[in-house]
Length: 510
Ligand code: NAD
Image 1 (cartoon, rainbow, N blue to C red):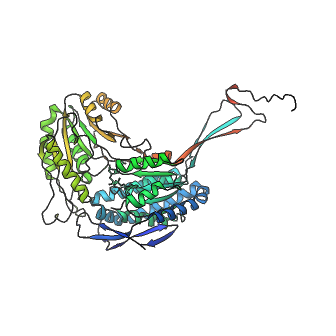
Image 2 (cartoon, rainbow, N blue to C red):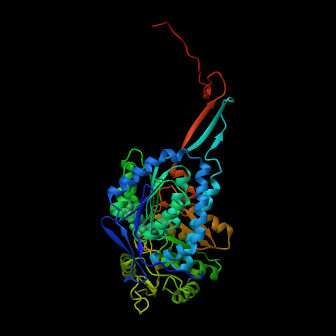
C-alpha cells in the first residue's frame, strides 16, 4: 500500500435523481475519531424534503429498472467491481480516517464489499426462482421472485462500506430501486460508494444518497409511505423503532440486523493458544465495536487460571493507536458517546462485584489524548442472576470472562441475554460442538475460530434482539423480493388440483 494519498477536506454532497447536490441548508461535520480537532469534511444535513425527493426519484426509476434484463443489471455490478478494485487503497484510507478502524481492517472491509459485488454479478445469470412439480401433468408451476419496489438502506458507522453493499447489491440486482442513508459518523465512505455506482453506469434514480442525522433523515426515510422495504443495520433501539413503523404500514416490511452480546466459549478440552487467539480477536478487533464482538468469554473453570494468565498478558500488550500506522492493532472509539457508554459499563462491572484483571481507561498520552482512545477492560464475573454487564451490549473494549463448570451451564449462560448473534466454541470434541450448535441461540456459529469474520455468500443475521429473521448479505434476497406462485395450463380443458371438479352444472335459464 505504498504512496497513498490522504484526502484533504472532503465536500459532502447528496446524490438524488442522478444529480449531485451540495448543501443548501444545515450541515454536519465529519470528525476524525483519532483526532477530534480535525473535521474531515462537511455534509448536507438531509431533511424530510430531501428524503421525499429521493424516494420519488427511486419510485420513478422503478418500472424501467425492474424491466431491464437481470443480466444487464448484473453487468453493471461487474463495472462496479472493477472500480472498487481500482480504488481499494484510497477507499480503505478514507474509511480508516473517518471510522477509526485500522488500515488493514479497513482494506479487508473494502475487499468484503468487493466480494459482495462480485457475488451479485455472479448470481445475475442464475434463475431467481424455481419450478416445482404439479399434481396435474399438464400444468407447470413456477415460484418466481418479484422486486418489492423501493428499498431504504439505513446503515451503521462500523461497517460503512461492506454493510451498505450487502443491502444495495441484492436489492438492485433483483430490480428494486434504493435510497441509501449512511451513518452520520461515516458519510464519506457512503458518498464515495454512491459515486462509484454512478460511474459504473447505474441509471439515475436507481440509487439515491441522502446524508443526515438518524432522527431526521433516517426517521423520515423509514416512515416514508413510498418505501416498501427498510433494510436496516444498527442498534436494537433504532431497529425496534423501525419494526414498529413497518408494522403500522399496510405494505412495508423490514430486514433488521441489530446488536449482540456475542461470546467465545472455551471448553475444558480447548487448545489453549487457539482459544486465547480467538478470544483476543473476537473481543478487541475494531476496538470491540463489531456487532459480533465478544463481550463475553465463557471459560471452563478447569482452564480458567491458565486462560486468564495468557489472555490478560496478550490484551495488555495490544496497541491501540493511530489507525493509519502499520503496527496498530486497533484504533479509537467512534465518538464521545461511545467512550462514555463503555466507561459507564466499566463502573457498573465494579459495582456488580467483578474481579478486575485489566482496568480500562481513557488513553491520555500526547499521541492519543485528542482521540477517543480506550484501553481494554477485562474482568471475571460469575454468572449470577441479574448481572447486567454480562447480558447487555457494551460495544467497546470491555470483556467479561465468565467461568462455567459444565457444557449445560455454559449453554444456559450463553443463552441468558436478550441477544443471539454470534457464538464460537473452542473444543476438540465433535460431539461437544454439535451440542453447542444445536442448543445455543445465534445466527452465526463458529468452531475453533473467533466469533467474528463473515463471508458474503453466507446469511448474516441473528435471533432475539439481534435480528428479525431476515438475514443480510446474500440472504437479503428473501427480504427484498416476494415470491409469487405462477401456474400455466397446457391442456385445453381446465383440470383442478385436489380432485376438485371443473364441471360447470347449468340449471334452468333465469
Ligand atoms: P444506530 O442504530 O445508532 O444507527 C444506525 C443507523 O440508523 C444510522 O444510519 C443512523 O443515522 C440511523 N438512525 C438513527 N436513528 C434513527 C431513527 N430514529 N430512524 C431511522 N434511522 C435512524 O447504530 P450505530 O451506532 O451506527 O451502529 C452500532 C450498532 O449497530 C451496534 O448496536 C451494533 O451491534 C449494530 N450492528 C449490527 C450489525 C448486524 O449485522 N447485526 C452490524 C453492524 C452493526
